[in-house]
Length: 167
Image 1: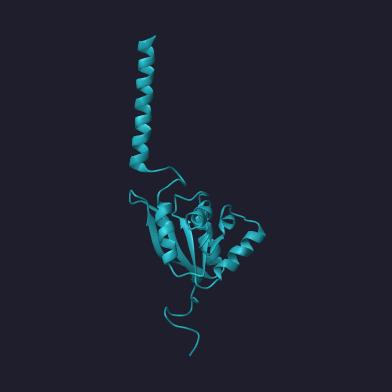
Image 2: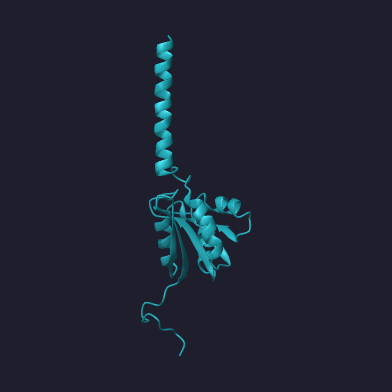
C-alpha cells in the first residue's frame, strides 16, 4: 500500500512540475498574459483624450492597474459579432470620430472574440476611417499580444496623399 501511494505521489509531483514548467516557459493562456502589465505602463505615456478598449478584458484590467486614472471607454461589444445591435454600432461610429483618441486591442489571433479586429477595421473603413498603428505590446516571450492605434479619417480617394481640400 505504501509503495502504491509513493508511486501516485511521484506521478502527481511530475505532472505538477510539467504544468509549472509550461507556465513559466510559455506564460498564461488567453487573457491571462503578462503583456497586460507592459500595456498598463505604456498606455499612459501616449497623449490621448480618450482610450477605447476594443476587446474583452482590456477595459477592466487597465482600469484596475491604473487605479481608474485613465480616460478609458469600453467599445468591445460593437465588434464581438458580425451584426452588432444598432446602439453598439452607433457608439462605435461616434467613437471613431473622436479626435486625439487611441484604441487598444489584442493582436489578430489573440482576440477574446475571434474576428473582432477584422470587424473593427471593416466598420471603420465603411464609415470612411482608417487605422494608424502606434505600436505593439509584447509579452515576456517577445510575442505581440496587444496593439495600439489611432483611427483617423481616410483621405478622399481622388486626393493625392498629403494634399488637402483647402487652397
